[in-house]
Image: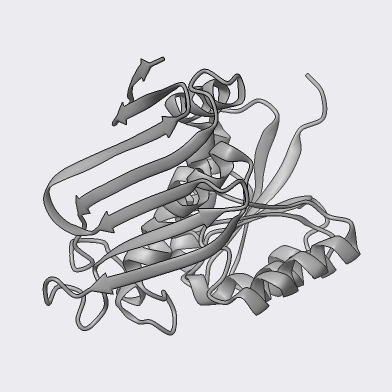
Length: 266
């Protein structure tokens, strides 16, 4: 076995459990430390997955064993924690959304560039088998030049369910749930398919129910890519039954993906 990367987990809440479980299945990475302001939560995670426990950011960033950190905290904390981690000489994997403002994102990138440390955002959908296949087929020209894409993710997610953190409903800490909790997956994947940045966006949201207490719970976005392609994204967190599908239209054919099933019409 080669070198094993020692990582620290910043924030031991719900999403951190996914990180810790995945690390436990890998031979090339190990948990060196867990930090949470809730000492019992940090203790429980460290007891189950190993490593030291800390109750503050300075403690875990000052641990010489920790080479990289996973930032798994509420969205409004990401920027300052990533900057601090970079200054402490740690590589960073930060949960999506990267931050709540473009200025904060730029600040995070600059700090990691100056420290010559890797910064990665947890855009996990890029690693789903069906999405990798879609990107491969587009790159191979299987449907010619892509001109139009449509992606829909309609589901039901209650922020008031058991175990859900209250900060989801606070725009100062979580932003808007449909945009910042789930949206990053959706509006990341479309430009990634094409290797073509979005140059123009028109979007409109609606408050379809009172579940999110004044927040928009559904939205549609129309995006223009540098390649000239147009994509449409529709998303809701108050829809029953759920639907997750995408349609990609090219000059020589099309693709349809429903959940993890891909149909190619060349």
